[in-house]
Image (tube, rainbow, N blue to C red; front, side, top):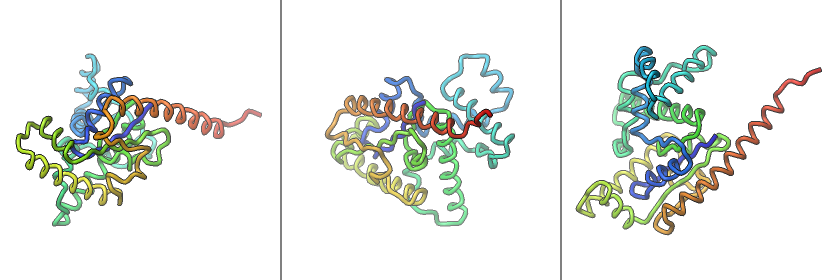
Length: 252
C-alpha cells in the first residue's frame, strides 16, 4: 500500500508533480476539489450509492463508498465520533488557503475554522487508511507525520518561476498580479499551518525531502519520489508484518 503526501507553495508545481506520480504508479490523486467531490458523495443517500454500484464507479465514488464503510465500521465498533460529513461539507473541504489569510474575528468564525481543520484532518486519515493515494495539500504531511510508510514530500521554487507558472496556469497576464496572489496565498497557507499544526508549510522536519523545482525537473522529481515511495511501501509492509507477529496469539 502506497501513500504519498505533497505540500507545495503556489506555483511550485506540486499538483503537476502529484498527478505525474499518481499516473506512473497507478495511484489515486486527491486534491481539495476531489475531497469536496468525495464529501458530496459520502453525504448522498444509501439508495443513490446503491444505484451507483450498478455502474462502473468513478474515483470519487469508489473512495466515497470506502469512507462510508469505514464510518459505518467505526460506529458499530464504538470507536468513531460524530460523522464529519454533513450539509455544506463539500464547500468546506474545497476552501482554498487564500480564504484563511485573515485570522477569525468572531467566535463563530473561529469555530468554523477549527471545524475545517478537524474535518480535513479526519478525511486525510481515512484516505490514508484506504491507501494507494497521492494526497495534495491540506497539511497531509503534518497530519500523517507519525503514520508508518507514508512518504511526505514538500515542493518549493524561486519566486520568478512561481510567477511564470501561475501566469500560465491561471491565465494571468500581469506578473505583479500573479506575484500578489502568490504572496497572499503563502501568508494564508502559513497561517493555516501555524493554527492547525503549530508549524510551517516549509518546515523541513515535516518532510522526508523537499524538491526545489527551479533546480530540478518535474520528471526527475517524479522518478526519485516513486523510487522512495516503493522503498517506504516495503518498509511499511515489513513493519505491519512485524507488529502482527508480535500480537498474534501463540498456540499451546
